[in-house]
Amino acid sequence: MHTMNNSWFALSLLFLCFSLKTYVSFGVDTISANQTLSGDETIVSAGGDFVLGFFKPGKPSNYYLGMWYGKVSVQNVVWVANRENPFSDKYSSVLRISDGNLVLFNEAQEPVWSTNLTSTSASSLEAVLLDEGNLVLRELSGNSSTSLWESFDHPTHTWIPGMRMRLDKRTNVSQRLISWKNIEDPAPGLFSLELDPNGSNSYFILWNGSRSHRYWSSGPWNENQKLFDDVPEMRAN
Ligand SMILES: *[C@@H]1O[C@H](CO)[C@@H](O)[C@H](O)[C@H]1NC(C)=O
Ligand SMILES: *[C@@H]1O[C@H](CO)[C@@H](O)[C@H](O)[C@H]1NC(C)=O
Ligand SMILES: *[C@@H]1O[C@H](CO)[C@@H](O)[C@H](O)[C@H]1NC(C)=O
Ligand SMILES: *[C@@H]1O[C@H](CO)[C@@H](O)[C@H](O)[C@H]1NC(C)=O
Ligand SMILES: *[C@@H]1O[C@H](CO)[C@@H](O)[C@H](O)[C@H]1NC(C)=O
Ligand SMILES: *[C@@H]1O[C@H](CO)[C@@H](O)[C@H](O)[C@H]1NC(C)=O
Image (cartoon, rainbow, N blue to C red; front, top):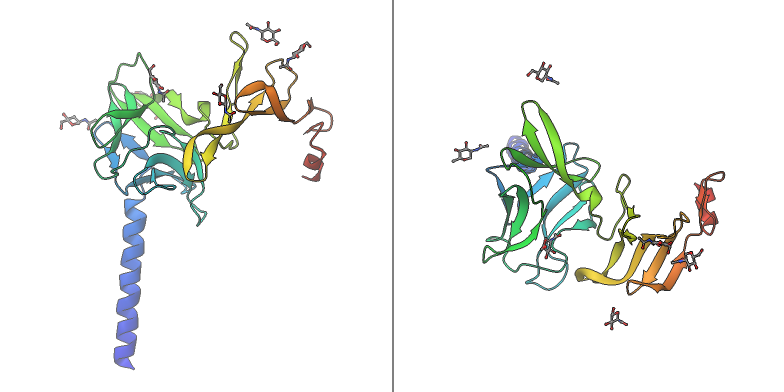
């Protein structure tokens, strides 16, 4: 009985160590100037709600940088950086701050994705993953920080609360959510969701990016009833 207790104790201790190790190595929400993210490493938002790291949705050799929920056991990707430019070796590919941007380099150390900012001082930048699911590149000065780039301004295929889907009224270009090509390929697929460029406060789903192939409409926003006119189901909640 004594031995039994001891082995249980040892087992629990071992388990605890593993849990602690996992917790500690996952306990970072920031990539600062001299840090990198590579291989199986991840950063996790402070409250554990979102995770950023490399993932492989299909083909063994196609890896992507993405964000998924931290408290949902099934990996459910909500944002993808290099949608059209997968890399093949996750251990030699790296995400780091480079020349004032957050840049993802593939195995040949070629950039496959970047925040693409042109004018930053590049002095003290860091990227932080916030609990709302927003990856923010910010500039630190003293004890304050200025946001330079946010993934909330660059939705890919999933809208999460707080994300901004804009219509640029000068160019009539509206930001779109675009479906994946298929379940194994996050490259932009055939369906997209955008705000009506005519300003009717409707959302449209377009087929193959064409405004003349409107596949679905939410109907205009109805401020009195707090729903879209053609989505009466919204009343339920
Ligand atoms: C980054 O590393 C360089 C060289 O190792 C060092 O001089 C610099 O102070 C470091 N910067 C930060 C922000 O840690
Ligand atoms: C960054 O800019 C380059 C050149 O203008 C462009 O080809 C690329 O698609 C941009 N990347 C992102 C992530 O916007
Ligand atoms: C930031 O720093 C300034 C002085 O450098 C100080 O007066 C101020 O209280 C600090 N603010 C915070 C939130 O720590
Ligand atoms: C925008 O509105 C004009 C006039 O109200 C209409 O003719 C046109 O078809 C609309 N365009 C779209 C994309 O709904
Ligand atoms: C944007 O689209 C609307 C409706 O189709 C049109 O009235 C307006 O002239 C367009 N603006 C530009 C800058 O193309
Ligand atoms: C989608 O549109 C492009 C042109 O914009 C065309 O080349 C392509 O064949 C279309 N795809 C489908 C499935 O129709």
